[in-house]
Image (tube, rainbow, N blue to C red; front, side, top):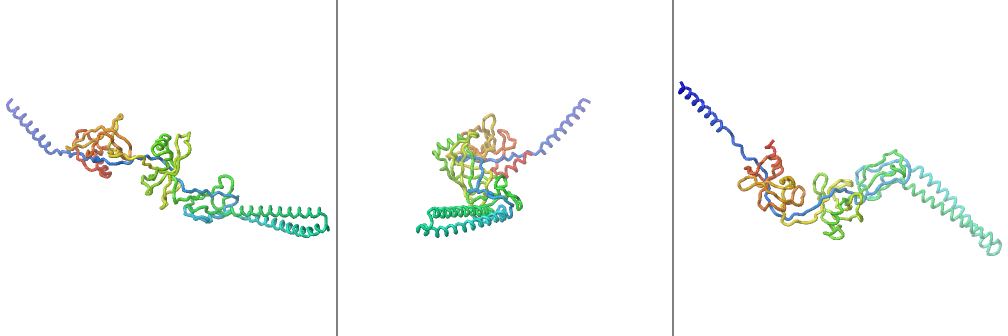
Length: 382
């Protein structure tokens, strides 16, 4: 019986071992994880600084009411281009027409008095020379003529002033440019004093001014590098709000004469051409200034570098397709890239690990780095 039991147990063990071996044969071997990589290359890299900035028209002219009255007409479409001298607003002129007519009447009356005084003087002067009238009467006639002339000149000045005020009822474009949104509508009462006086703004946008603030320390660095006038900086770039780079390069206009004591910064102004009219006044942008060029620099994407307790490292892929950890030293950030000053050589393959789970020594399948490839690879780990 013992021998029979032993043979049964042995048969069961052999049967189970056969099942286990067959299961092992059916297991699939997972392929290596695909890891994007970049090949390290040396090149001359421009080092730049970026600053938040705001755009202004080459000339921003406020349209301000200079008389009081009801807004009678708006003669433009908001946001359109306007030409210098184009009629934009009309304020009800009836009150000012009345004042002009009244002053015209005053001028006519004083002119009549002046003519009479002059005629009287012409009559008296010859008589005074013949001693037919006293010198006192001659002096009185001269005084009346001078007083009449002064009254006439005063009335004419008052008439001109009223005509000028009447002219303010029509508001014209002071320059060629783009007009903004109107602050008043037809029927609104406009006053030359207070908030209602500001009607609109016309911006000349053939060129655009860009203002930005630079720290005092950076300002001193620019002075040492470029001389006493950093305004010699050219080839400035503009980064728009969507991240794109503006097609035209600009130049520096000026720097402020003083440091703002509240912020410790110096205000700079640059100028950019705007032939296509893409830029408008009031846009928030970034201005990029090239401050130097680093020769034979190694630049890799920032996402290829990890930092832990002040130590920077990258994952390199060797010839055996294994992951190796390299400690590196980093320098300037260039957009989405980083200059590596030590730890890499030309020809090294650096892995863009991102969210991939890889370990040093792991065997991977290297693929050239591209944004769309990286997204596909990251999906493998989800």
